[in-house]
Length: 283
Image (cartoon, rainbow, N blue to C red):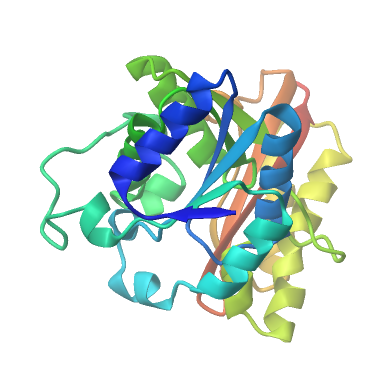
């Protein structure tokens, strides 16, 4: 596995891959890799030729300095998992290379209106501006590629897809299914910050989704089921909603069809999120 940090070398490598008639599969990550990331690496390998993974903890998407400080960093384990999962080139850019002015604000920001203002965006102001800005830079450096993102961060996936449509990046965005641990908890880098008791409490997120997946009902009834399950488990609720899977607009009670249930809450002070498909029937 090749390891690079220099932006010019990174761009040259990707251009060289395409010059040989091969495709680039890009997997952006912030490290603290787990089996969800491994699934993205494997998907990129299955659908293309060369897998390029980036490992960069992007400070611009953290609105809480303490949250950034506590974000887990496991570079040696990350490199090992990337190698074992078939990554061909691991990019580890420096903070100075990505955001030379940091901690001062970067003059240029990519902002995806509407989608960025809801749910995670409402609870974490500026978060999706930081996400869109860094992903735009990753796309600009890498060039034409397929880019792989997990559906666990469903709103992030929607934001990136909208940005690609609006700015005409030569990138195909591929969403990959959520990967869950043996107990049903969605893999997340933040899971490492909760205790065994906290983990049992966190299972309420996937249990709430399973509950609504098994009942076709109107949107408000589905929201009530989600909320009740989370509160009964003692999860500090951030939001629980049923939305259009593309626009993330909340569903009305007169709508019928396939939608997405989004849940998020705090367990032992750690913000966790999950989502899943749900069917609603109008009343």
